[in-house]
Length: 338
Image (cartoon, rainbow, N blue to C red; front, side, top):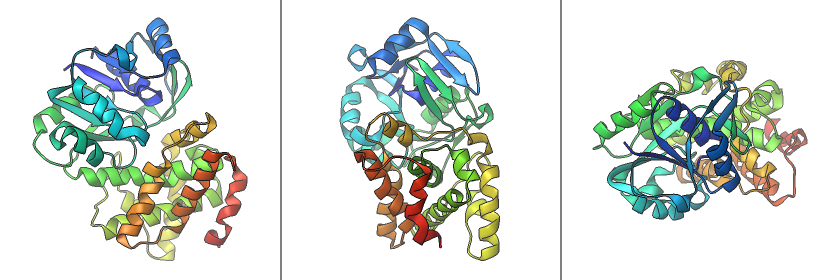
């Protein structure tokens, strides 16, 4: 399969390096000219939890030619309809675009490309772009896993082929209940990416700080309650049943859930959320596609999400420069934590 990674930033560079190293030819495509030049001249250098350098094929969007059987989409969701429209002519007639984006992006992409040409992939690992051509893997190598699926059946054979491609990097689960897998990823993102972005820290630092951990736990609960109200069955993540670990009704289970958070985040302690990375670079982030989606779905379900809503408000102020990501932002949650 002719393969492309469109939006080859931190995650895409790591993915492209692993696939290329395994002998799978793929083009890494990004609008970041300095990054593409570095990849062309020096290869993809992956640091952090691993240390490897791989020569890769790297292109600017205007250098794309022909069509691809498989396109992994890793851009931010800020311009999804525009990006999908651009990629439509580069996706083979029977090709598949696999979005690895955050949130719940499949429906909008399917409106442009058609439901049978769009699949989704929830990933449970993180990376940071340290410099042009250099990406830091911030999750442990054993956390390199993928949950793959579609909102509508019919492309099982192609999904198996995609799973074979991704399988060179880590375990792949083809989910029958893919929307449940998406909600499980949203659960983690809204809770830990949202909290870490507000406080300007990593997942591990959220788990260590008692107040920050409680904020994340409250968002977990808001997401569980919203999903359950909408009939969502949350899928396990890397073999772990999130509902058994983190959902609660009474005080005893609430305390146990709170105590389990640091253990659950151990493999991802160094992970710095992409929203925080964007804000630090003065860019608009994906809060509307992560915490914003949870707030929207909460309203649709009639479930209050006050802690998550506050995260959305604070991150909007971080984007505008009114606030800075820092631990002092814990003060905004005082009334909700009492």
